[in-house]
Amino acid sequence: MAGDCNDGFTHREPAPYNWQITNHRGSQLKSFAYILAGALGVGSMAAMAAESSCHYTEQATLPFTNHGALSLVDGQVNDRQVSMLLSTIAIRTALVRAEADRQQLTLSRAPRVAGGESYTAFVKRLAFGTGQLVRANIEVDDVKENANYAAVIGSDVLSQSDLDLALRDKQAKLFHAEGCQDKALAYWDSKALDIPMESAGKHDLRQIFFVEVNGQKLRATISTTSAHSTISQEVAERLGVTPQPSAVAPADGGAEHAGSKPGRKTATFDSFAIGDETIEHPHFVVIDRHVPQYFGWTTLADVVLGRDFLNAHHVLLAVSQQRLYYSYLGGPVFQAE
Picture 1 (cartoon, helix red, strand yellow):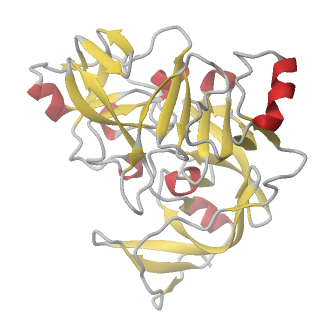
Picture 2 (cartoon, rainbow, N blue to C red):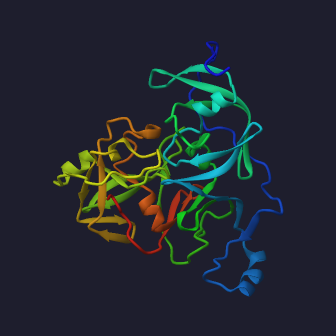
Picture 3 (cartoon, rainbow, N blue to C red):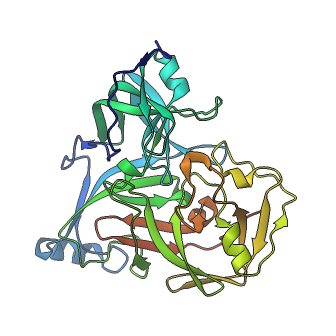
């Protein structure tokens, strides 16, 4: 029963789960040689496919179902069909406590690396798209009681593939690359921009890259669960910008940074640059990054690009190359209000 604890659980340093692709080369997947559809015609693609050594395989297309400001995907926990939240800001994939209770799963106590306690639950199968975890102890997350999803798919799983985010098309895709290290992977746009990125750590697969705000180079990351892009209060003060109270409370759908609750502060800066793209007068939510944030975001980055940025861009986190590809689609980018 949920709530029963097994004190015999042996703690290990967290490492990415062994995520299994169940149909990696099947006929339901799209596998194509390195050719940009936007740059070449269909005939040219067919003629050149055999000559290319780069194969970029679409492992899964994940349609989003919108709930408030969140985008959920269909999945399965044991024999139960559920909704799941894709979170690039979450370090670990986790089962929501309410779902563990619904399925009457036994909880095992596990000490956290940074102190305190956490719990795991044994699941026979956790799956979405064409991938799955089989017979695994999954961390249990005490998220809000009214969460409308059963599990959070974190960066430990998402970063085992290249993650393509197209929020305007209400979908994400997972890709596998073979022999593509020196090829541009932005299949949707031959003129897409790209910059270097890297994992935050050996067992922290959240992706980090650099941006500039008012000409200052800052560490940044992407969050699929944050309604608004944020900047740390520390950086705002260093740049001489005074945050102002926001008059508007966001409809965050249950997964927003603590700093974006009513009473939050926002600030307008002179400029924001990511690679060769520059945005004048960006408006950010300002947060204290030393205050615990939802999904554990603390001091990972100075800037978090949220769903407002993602709604205005097509983004590919190409972990296989340690590159971030992005194309501006039009419309406002930073919508702190």
